Amino acid sequence: MLIDGRVYFARLDLHGITDDNVVKVKSQFSLNDYPLSIRDIFHCDGLLLCTTMDERLVVWNPCSGETSRIIKPLNSKYSFDVYALGKSSCNNEYKILRVHHHGDGWMSPCLVKYEIYDFTSNSWRVVGEIRGWTFPGPWRHGTSVDGNTYWLSFDFSQDRQRPKNTLRYFDYSTERFGLVSLPGDPLSYHPFALSVTGEEQNLCLLTSCVKLLDIGVWMAIKIKGTGDMSWSKLLTVKRTSSDQFFKLCKGVSFLADRKNKVIVHPIKDVNFRNFLHIVGEDKYRKVNLCAVGYALPVSCDPTLVQIQQGSLGLGTWKEPITKFS
Image 1 (cartoon, one colour):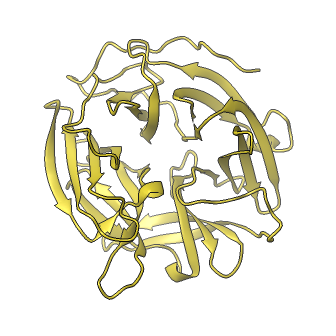
Image 2 (tube, one colour):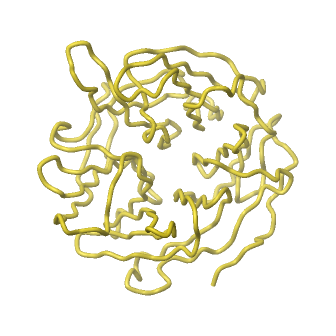
């Protein structure tokens, strides 16, 4: 979990959702040789791609303590950059994708360029550019599944007054973007965010019904070569207009638990305190994180994956320096 520029390990006991100790923030991790403030983290296969406040990148394995060298973008003047970590299915090599928009991409299309950082050569290369669709601001934090990265996107067309909601992915083997289908009737709901289930790492979509206030969570079952994706409904939460416990916005961070059929997402109160909201069909729990600032939860299982030779720095795992009871 990313809180105020630092990464914390937290354990969720969703079996004891009625207990006070449902969430335990165990310790703070640190990049020993890099006194950096982290602005964003992206998870792939137990590795974390950390973006610093000054737009530098570090790939980090919190389990082994291995880190890459400090990676600098070709040009960091763009304010709408997107970074993601993925893996080629051909040779299992990891790559960093950088996507930068020449505009915000909300109500009109803009030029979108993308680059790849190759760990074997320790260098960036320009891959291509696109027009006609964008990742609007809140949707720019992608979700990794099976080495590929998925985003909600806007498609623009001259015969359409409003942009169309779509789902795209980046294939790190072909280094190309692809389009996959959304569940059900995309016109019947508002898509809010993507995430994954816990150990299974299935892609999940959080939606809100257009006519009702119901919240839905869809889970991807199978991705076909034609671009069609099979979905199943994981969870439906019925709400009334008086419900204040679960407010959604585009790009909200959440985690989905398939077994317990709950979702977990952080939200701030009026005093800017962070709480985790745990919501299911017939259950709700609000947990104080005892922290002020921005909180980003990430489902990250320990891994012994080694960062590729030639990219390792001298970073090591630092003993926990902060503990919570």
